[in-house]
Length: 321
Picture 1 (cartoon, rainbow, N blue to C red):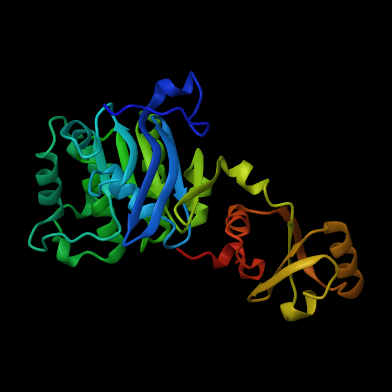
Picture 2: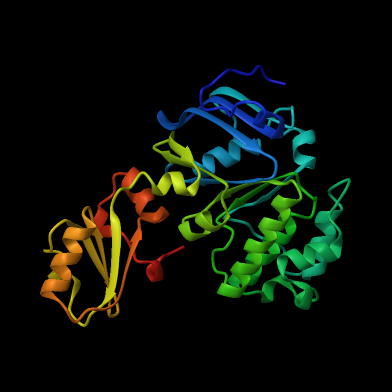
């Protein structure tokens, strides 16, 4: 086991008793460009940890190092008291990566049975089917699966070993609403059973719905961590949403409005002073309907912390995966 370094980012006792993986002062570069630097992180049992960041922030590099697929340039990593990529770690770890190819000549049940055979204590076959929502298609060949169905199969394979540590890299891409909800429930059930789950996603509603703890990477550095409410509290602006046949640029000129966007007949304004903006809005445009005021969401916090343009904020019904 590697020597551990005390860090202010490490969680204090007694939570440390649930920590199954530790990262201390991790550094990694490619061709002289820093991909991860000064990274300290704990991964706990019974927890969904969401790792967020823009493309190139270092999320995939971090997962590959934790899996032992890449070697760190500097720093200490402990997974189940052993080094990353060790047999001890592999036997207790499951992983669903963004890019994966499967033999097209095998049926779903054959894929699952094969992956179960790799582990000393695999998850029950019927339980794997239930969690992945594949019970009704276990005799289908993988070449005949849609994109969302293939994602469900990849999730099934990631849990075949009954993992205590599960990495999910953009797991719901291509899934319809029902399949996504089923996946989310499976993740919650696995967490309740003690599994530590590391989730990366660009679908911030997914992180907001599932994550107990969130870390945000920017240019390879951990710039903030906390729960969803703590992230949202970092943005003082409020969101005003209403229905109007007029275009959003008209409303962008209202006092204290920071940004405006439109989806169909719904307009979304981000404001630094709710009372000032509302008074002007209702005075100048008294015919607006279906008006609501809410605090900033995780997406607004994400953009704010990444110093993105606030005008790029998307309303809820325009969120992209």
